[in-house]
Amino acid sequence: MSTNARPRARGSWITAALAAAALAPQAALAQGSDALAGFFKGKTVTVYVGLSPGGGYDTNARVLAKHMGRYIPGEPNMIVKNMPGGGGLVMTSYVANVAPKDGLHLGAPQRGIPFEPLTGGEASNAKYDPLKLNWLGSMNADTSVAVATKASGVKSWRDLKDRELIIAGTGVGTESVVVPYVLRNVLGLKFKVIAGYPGGSEMNLAMQRGEVSGRGTFSWTSLKPQKANWVDSGDLIVLFQMGLKKHPDLPDVPLVTDLAENDEQRQLLELEFTGFQLGRPYFLPEGVPADRVTGLRRAFDAAMKDKELIAEAEKLDLEVNPTTGEEMQEILKRVYATPKALVDKLSEASKYQPDLQVIKSK
Image (tube, rainbow, N blue to C red; front, side):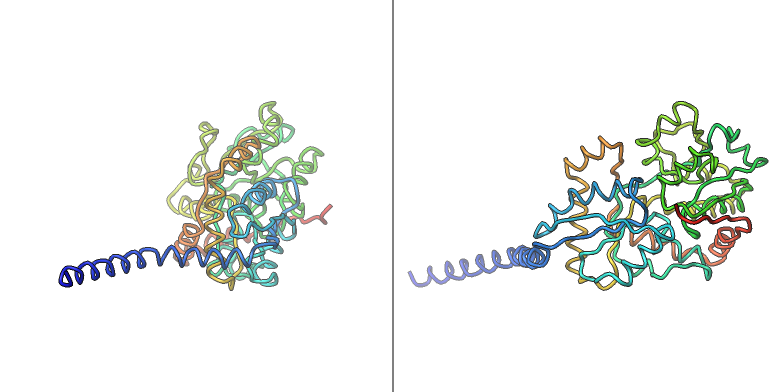
């Protein structure tokens, strides 16, 4: 009997060892989750939005903050704080350089912010390195449109070849200012920008008051739920759409890359509008402990599948087609590997603004 008992004992020991090995990663994961819960429990995570309240970025951030906390270990409270200035550069610099690097401070910048140090060149006011920031993900890929008021007399993008359109912008060096001038310098579209408006709400009021005659960039995911009646009534004309592919809602509106007359123009436009793939991005500063970055990324991913978040987004006509934080990091690596000659041409096109007018924020 002792000879039979020995194999059974050995088999039991091996089985136990294998079971322990299989459970070890789960135990480590649970232990890590417990550590994160211990840190986040009872605390508040602040999402800083680089624009004023009421616009698309602000609305998206508030929907995220309402639901994401349930998926963070410890279920901390989440709030939104608006920090307009410089079209998002002020907020991004604050979160990247000043805010504590503890995982409790998230930035919600405009989609062009990750590319500003690359395309802005030496003239850029960016005080952050996008490749060192910890990107959590993006709620949606985005499509932006250029619009003109009916009163402007501009009915098509072709009219911009011969007719000047005065449009509203936020901070100097931001997307709402840079993109129109890129299109002017690359495609010859006659945009003139009045900058200095705190955010989208103020730019819309400027159109209503007749201070400006359009916007060079207007996110479709903001325009559709907020001002669709302007388009339906004909008071606002959609001239073209910007991104790397057409939005399903706008099959008959030309894509900006289709306006290119040669390969170089098309390459420059593709580089400029890669940022639209990132839509509504969120980031943590460099230096946040790796386990907290991972925990917040997984919480973000889970929130993007949350039925309540999706239902609320649908009610607000917000799109949810997310990009993960890891995917964002790879996109940025590829973009920052673009040949310098091409980047220099785009940089030159984006900074040549001899007639830019800047007003004091109202």
